[in-house]
Every structure is written in structure tokens, then in C-alpha cells.
Length: 221
Image (cartoon, rainbow, N blue to C red; front, side, top):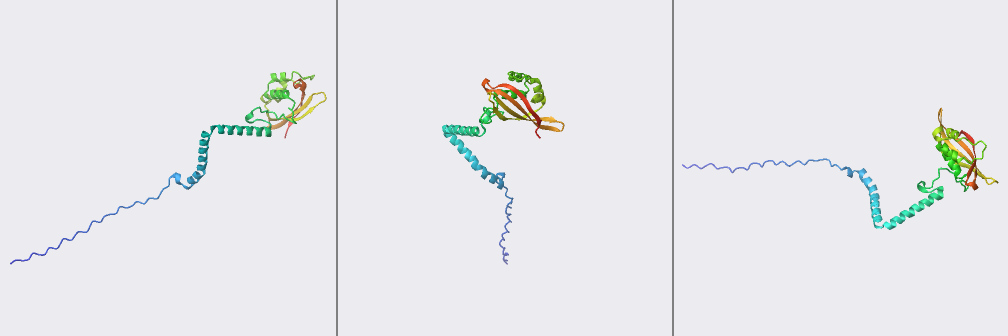
């Protein structure tokens, strides 16, 4: 007796393996330092300036002659403006450390300037030469002057020298009064003072010094 073979069940397909999806890593977006709000703001300000310098350099390279002429005109206008305003040339050219220009004059002449310069610097030898033409019966002693009023020996700091007045006399001589602001050491600290010198000069003889006299030496405050 033939028995029928049991029916075979078709193989059930096995469940497909679970495929794991790759996890996407989320990371917070980071800006570079040059992309921050502050950096962008600074770039927006500096970029036009840098571009301006760049195009200016390009223009200078392409128009050298015009550039030189422009610089010359700029320096000339600056020099003229400075001279008309202060009476001196820029960059210290021909500058006068003394404020001697008063009423269109020269404040007693170069001999007065030389004498004051020698006194300020403590140069007794030059001081004696500058006052060798004095007509005074008792001219001031250069060594004594240097010891009392100069910067190196008297330890005074001359701050300003100004012409207080210039007066022409009938005998062709000129009387000039010059004030010197100075600072000197004191028991309680530095003390400000002023000394006033009287000069008599003879312009017809090259501004020769005839008389030198100390009018005042006192505190200014």
C-alpha cells in the first residue's frame, strides 16, 4: 500500500535582518573666529580703508610726477600757514627759542640773546666776552651771575624767556626788559619764580651791550 508522502511546507522565508541605519551625529555648528559678528563688523569698517590705501598706492605708482607736485604744494602751504601764524618755519627751521619779536622789532638784538643764552647754560667765559663792551663802572661778575642764575650751577630750570618791553631813546640807544620764568628747588618742593633783566644796547654798533642790570628776582606765585 502506497502511502502518500506528507506534503512539505514551502520554506518560509526568514525575516530579513534588521539593518541598522547609521546614526547621524549632530554637532553644533561652530563659526570660525573670522565669521563672528564682531569680526564681520570690524571687517566692514577696515575694508574700505584698506581698499582706499591700495588704490592710492596704485595711483601714486601710475602718476609719480603728479604725486611729487602734490607733496610739494602741501609742504609749501603748510610752511606758509605756520609762518603766518607763528612767525616760524615748520620742523624747527630757523626757530628762535626766545620770544623776542615784539612790535616788529628784535627785542634788544642778538647780543641780548647771546648774553642770556650764556647765562642760562652757565658759560662764564662766553658771558664775559658778551659783556666786554659794558660801560658800567662796576659790571656784573660773570662767575657770580652763573652761580646765582644759571641752570647748571644754580639748579634753576628756565621755562620761558619773553620780552616785556623795548623802548628807543633819543640818544639812539635801546632799553629792553626781558623776563625769565624759572623753577627752582625749595624746602617744600619746587618753587616758581621770575627774574627781569634790563639791557641797554646800541643798535648802530651791532647791538653792543652797554648796561646789564637785574631789575627783579622774586617768586611768581
